[in-house]
Image 1 (cartoon, rainbow, N blue to C red):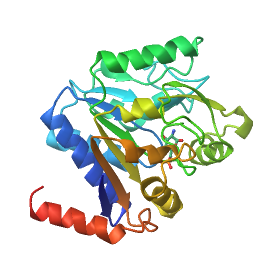
Image 2 (cartoon, rainbow, N blue to C red):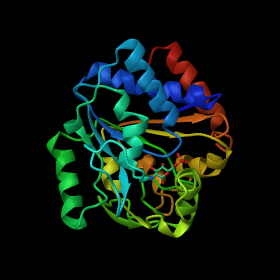
Image 3 (cartoon, helix red, strand yellow):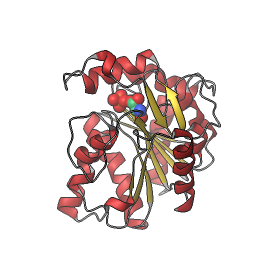
Length: 271
Ligand code: GLP
């Protein structure tokens, strides 16, 4: 695991976006797994900047989003809608600003009437394109990856998940409240890639920022692997794993000094 610590949210976001851009430049038709939440906003802003100012080309890139609220979701052909779907979030914050092809974008469809069949199809689609090259992830305050709430099997696949109270509270504050939507109107379920699905991505990048994530980041990276903190499954990933944090999110890491040293010395030896 490469644990990268940067002073601020902006620097963390620039680092994360820089790594994603490296992937795209090396493999222009790479498959990216994308995440929502407030944490990736800076990363997406920086990717948009690189597209506009440096010509970062998304024309062959394929994307799969981690999750979507169940019961809502928009057709990407209808670009703007008042709902708080993750599809709309992705469109507003990233997709409409870059030259990605609509047919290469996948966000789980929260309106599906047959979730079981749909979730199996989503898994098949990921396989059909050869799997995810790089999966971007945040972390919920209860340690969840995507919407894999505590107790999700570490081998779980794409499915419907009931949302935990803490998750509903956080996501209500960040997104629904501002839109003037009542708390009980917020969806209480989501379609989410499973932990097992996520672990199949060839590379994983988890990002976190701010004091309120410090405790759960330490548990996920340095604590026991447990289904109670599904992001702790990061410790099981066999391939390229990067955790990119700002100083506040790294505050509770017992081995923080080692991680900082390891990054420096690897750079020194060009490793
Ligand atoms: C939601 C998303 C997660 C995300 C989490 C954290 O629950 N499903 O993928 O990691 O929010 O969000 P934030 O970055 O706003 O703290």
